[in-house]
Structures are given as structure tokens and as C-alpha cells.
Length: 138
Picture 1 (cartoon, rainbow, N blue to C red):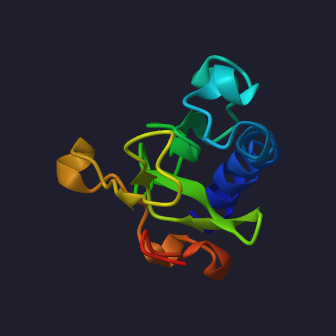
Picture 2: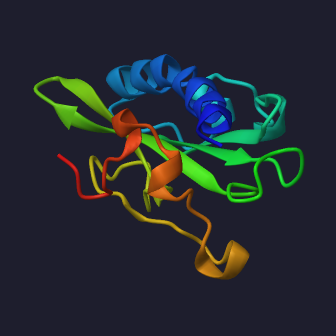
Picture 3: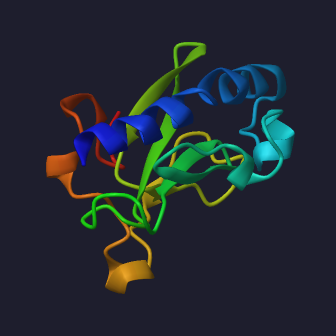
């Protein structure tokens, strides 16, 4: 399962530079894939195990496929998000999070979701040590 999750991280990381560039140019986070300048349909960014990669208010979220992947991670998600730091941005990786508005500089909140009975997040044991940041990380 961890190898399959690493594909999700890799695909999500592919969107970081576009999100960072947008933020540095506009002072707000890109609201969606189109404004970030990445594939406009989230399902256009996919892999063998990953169903989609979505940019929403600067948060990049990868969702695993619902079949053909380890059953413990089917349909589950992880997120990459950034915060402003000394004129630049610092990125984090971990459980799915959400940012309420594109103008919210840093605030993100946990977004485990209601799918799978509120268990939309990938269990920590399947995340590499480099992708275990909390939504409150600074």
C-alpha cells in the first residue's frame, strides 16, 4: 500500500510549482486546477493507483482509485498544502485538509470527509515519514 501511496504523493507534488507560482504572482491561492494552470479536469491527473488530483484554494489533494489498489487505501485521500513563510512558501504533506477561501493565507482544517464513514484519510501507517504533517503544522 505504501508504494501505491507514493504514486499519489508524486502526482500531487507535480502541481506544487504551479500553485507556488500562482501564489507568488497573485497573493492568493489558486481556487482550482484551471486557475493553477494544471490539467483542468482533476481526473486528467491520474496514475495506475490514483484516480484524481485536485487543486482547491491552493490545497492539492490526491484520491486513490476505488479498485485495483490495496483495500485499506481504496478511495482515500492525502493532501499537500503550503503556508507563507518569509516571502516564500513552505509545503506540507499529510492527511486530507481543506482551505475555506483562496484568500486565507495559511489556515487549513482537517478534511477526513464523510466518505467511507468519515474515514476518507489514508492511515498514517501507509504514509511515508515525509508525509505525516498535521493540518496545524507550521
